[in-house]
Length: 310
Length: 137
Image 1 (cartoon, helix red, strand yellow):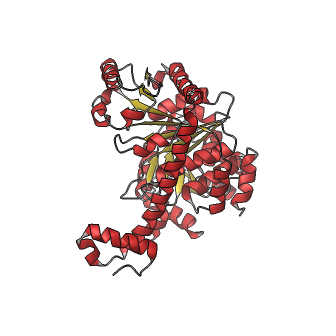
Image 2 (cartoon, each protein chain N blue to C red):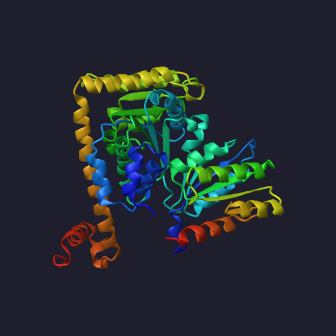
Image 3 (cartoon, each protein chain N blue to C red):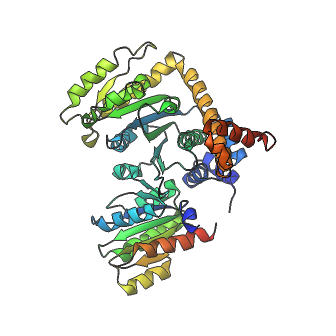
């Protein structure tokens, strides 16, 4: 069995098989310190787009439609994240099914995965995969993920451009997302716009977004119908415009610095989770009677050994 | 204990050729997911080429094909050829459908890792994958 070093070299030469092997290591482990070092050292400037939204709004279909645009003259990676069942531990990864004949695009690399390990694994894994693809010469990565609304604080630091997808059926979503994604998504998409309810949703959204734009970027609302390709030119144009905006306003470096901060935080949380989880399993019962004090003791034990456990 | 190990199995399921009957494969997809596996379903009417490309990009441990059209000899031979050409021989190629026993024998001799006919229990498939894939860990 070859080590990752030879796969890395082959991947740099553009060998698809080797690219896949490296992504599998990042997805499923075991992680290798030197591999991660190599990925971060390559300091890829890959343009990253995140596309998010609730289940059933048509994210995968939009992604499939965007493939042709994004893969013009460059290699594009798509990383599709799906949830894992907490009961069986299994996952159904159905994003590829929407690709249909686009799956055969010669400049597309598509990987679906369900995060494993800790609650922090998903975004950091996706981001690290994106960086690896950047190192291997890809021009753009699109990360497709399920957005849960307010709690998705880390999503905003995942990509250069974040696209939030809504559908007319999910009109109430706006209520749920008021202080979450709505506050910072860069582009809004109302997909399935051929269905009733698209216009009222657009007005409601316009109302919510009226205060946005202090950075100089007024987030556009795009109406699309991924199924018949309607509005795709315009959506791609909006993405390009945002990319251009970030570059010409010196905002891209700022974003990338916050990406790095988030990556460091997610790795920290992920490592802490693993350590603390092990400790918690073996924690004495009295720790749990006062969970607040118990937490302090477990943290102390996890990081300083046994001496402070009195 | 074995169930725990299963969570590290990733499998691609697909329908090959001109065959749109996907009820069976969806039952299997659900059963494998519930057994803790990561299941990618790439849909109906896939060409052998598209299936092997997907398997490569997704980095799966096994490829499961459902075929009810009767074209299994041609299509599995094609899949075997592509698996070799794309250097994916470490991935299991398994399948099921309306395949006569003598054809199953021939195809398994040619290199298909396992084929099942009608009335196979999902448990058999799970057991097979478990045994084949968790052994080497």
